[in-house]
Image (cartoon, rainbow, N blue to C red; front, side):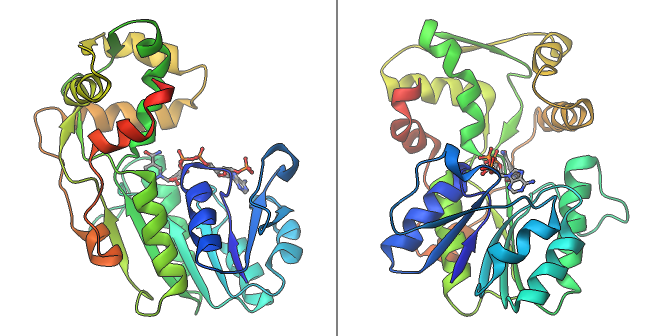
Length: 277
Ligand SMILES: NC(=O)c1ccc[n+]([C@@H]2O[C@H](COP(=O)([O-])OP(=O)(O)OC[C@H]3O[C@@H](n4cnc5c(N)ncnc54)[C@H](OP(=O)(O)O)[C@@H]3O)[C@@H](O)[C@H]2O)c1
């Protein structure tokens, strides 16, 4: 039995479908499983990574886990997985983690690195996925593109290599179900370094519209986002954006190495999500 945590999320939903299509027995964890619609083959259970006692039932009979990185939950998850006899864990970590740093830079890298660390010392067969930013982050522009052809946001020149959630799910499925991925750290990116302005232009091309990105002062955007995102995480995001202006985001071939298919482009991602925009 495979357990998918983060099963209602961007990657988890795809991963469930891939595993079911491949004939695996799959259990899905959600803090509120009643809220979601599940494939009929999936056994959806309630559980919260922040409440270790809720994990014992969810982990019963499970051999492999796709692990969502809930801050501060690494050691308790590892203990529960060891109790249950889990053998393999695939962690959705973050590309922000820096192996060369004595101290991780910012809260996002820090809490992901802590969970990685808990797995490394656990005796479990672990695989770490470190994605660059998800293309799904640009769904935050959908409200603007539904009402016009201008996206207003911070740092037009902030660069990243946005990755399609379906590629992340495909890598996770391989690492969960095939041998040869234990002890591997995969750095997962889309195929190209794109600025926010590039992404807006690609959105427009894919949708057949002339969409452009208009840069607003960072403080204005930060204030608007502070209603939804905690301050320290926002600081991290804005520092990353500011630091990436004028740079080329690194790209890797790890998606292709693991799945046998090149990473999907941002253009393809937009076509897959055209209805949202
Ligand atoms: N977004 C990015 O650019 C990016 C970049 C690098 C790495 N990542 C990593 O990928 C993760 C997912 O990102 P996302 O933006 O795609 O998230 P998302 O789709 O919003 O998914 C969040 C998922 O996590 C589950 N979850 C949250 N807290 C939980 C808890 N305490 N116990 C159990 N499940 C919990 C939620 O399930 P329920 O609500 O159903 O419980 C939901 O399925 C991030 O948290 C980060 O670790 C993201």
